[in-house]
Amino acid sequence: MKNQNNPLIETKNLGKVYFRKNAAPIKALDGINLKVFQGEFLAIIGRSGSGKTTLLNLLGALDRPTSGEIKLEGKILSNFSNRDLAILRREKIGFIFQTFNLLPSLTVVENVESALVHSRMSKDQINSKVTALLDLLGLTEMSNRLPLELSVGQQQKVAIARALVKDPTIILADEPTGEMDPITSREILEKLIELNQKSKITLIIASHGKSMHSDADRTLFIKAGRIVSQKEAGY
Image 1 (cartoon, rainbow, N blue to C red):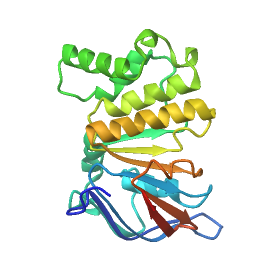
Image 2 (cartoon, rainbow, N blue to C red):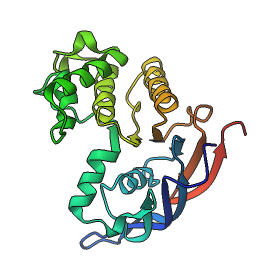
Image 3 (cartoon, helix red, strand yellow):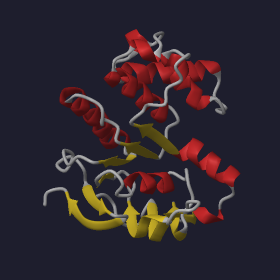
């Protein structure tokens, strides 16, 4: 377990209900109490529909809770305006999705650069930063290719580069290796772990699989919107 003095993220009685017209409400999360610490690798494991994606969306300020609260660096997110939340996402949080969300008409370099569209860095600084990341992830030779010209694993590496180029405090990854073969899946996971360990980026991965138990500092198991158990590394 990492430094537990002051949590980077803390939730209290976090709940999320989706209200539907002419249908019963869906309770996606029900009383989640959670602390995440700087530099921690946290795995959230649960079946489809268990609430893990909803939890990631709330932690990443992509959605607002129905009840309870979320604190990031001691600040209550419900007090933030939509503009402040947008700035928070842009400056603090990197998102990696199973579907990659790459822009098909942009090259690898352009996709990664797109994350810095609001940056105050000069063009030379951006070029240098993007070039270093592509080299780190083994994508230099693919830099001018379009997403459809890449393998699934290469596309996910581009998505990782796009998330990292902002120097985020937190990486949120939702099923980042879900559609990959075991070898590529392991390669992507090892790259994320390396970045977590070397750069001290807080890494939160949601998955339906249990293969990352031995890698994560802590694993939470979620069912029907509740945390039902947790396991720390070495136990």
